[in-house]
Length: 322
Ligand code: UDP
Ligand code: MG
Image (tube, rainbow, N blue to C red; front, side, top):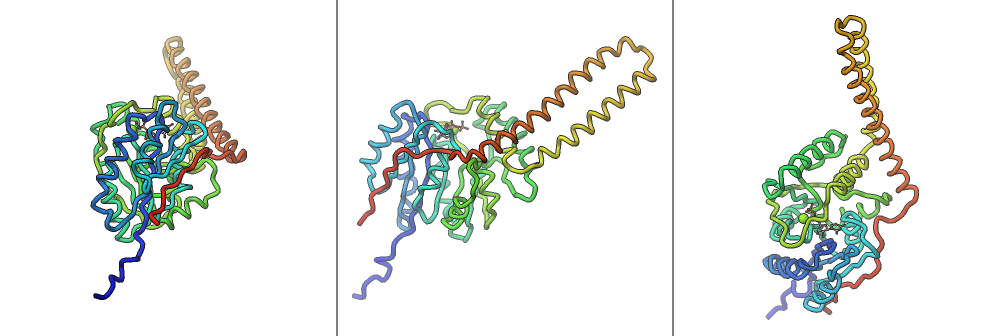
């Protein structure tokens, strides 16, 4: 019988990046679920699961080492030297991923592993980037829903020539080519959901429903959400700087109205409240302007310092089959 010509052709490698911070209750179930759900495509791909321990204080790393023993041919471990935050953890995974195609996702099973198969379909159709976009947000509370709406609205207004997807976070697929371009950007403080649209390349979208967190608690308290939002909003363009100009115009218009009130208003003493209101409003505007500038200075600071977004302390790659 003639020998199967495809026998020795290597399957492309799929790397899945899963950042984890204090997720001891998730490591095992995440790995098992992911590997089971990807079974249908394992005829066409081999799999690398990059577990990134973002400086966890619980037994996440020990749990990862256990998983590595169970799946030595699939699991790559990365341990950061401390907690750097989600962006730093994803970035470490992006730097180390060996795959021909790479997927980044949350590790708490809110991003369902089965969606990866849909992302891969798009990739096979020739897309370099495939963004997983949330169809609904019913598993989020009202505050998170509305703050997310506002965040994506402003991000969209500031995005200039970039095409950003609303309701799309880190759950994305990149081809090796797209990842190499992304990794070649000189930014030291990149925001994944901004730099991916920045590099362009052919981008597809897959809608999915985000599940509830499988175990543990969200790591995003209000303050870190605000910091995250500000970071990506100012990281995207210099547009907010330009908006200060319009704030100034609004303030001028308001003071002009006050001038008219002072000149033609009848009950002057009652209008003391208006003046007080004007004072607070204008000082708020000034503070707003200053805080925007401060945010840019922070970005300049970070970029000039050239401090890396994360530091890899340990790297244990998956074992090659032969
Ligand atoms: N995460 C991380 N470092 C952090 C905070 C979070 O690697 O400092 C990981 C976390 O373990 C999870 C993902 O980022 O896999 C998303 O975090 P989380 O579920 O807490 O955020 P939410 O889904 O509530 O926005
Ligand atoms: Mg989550």
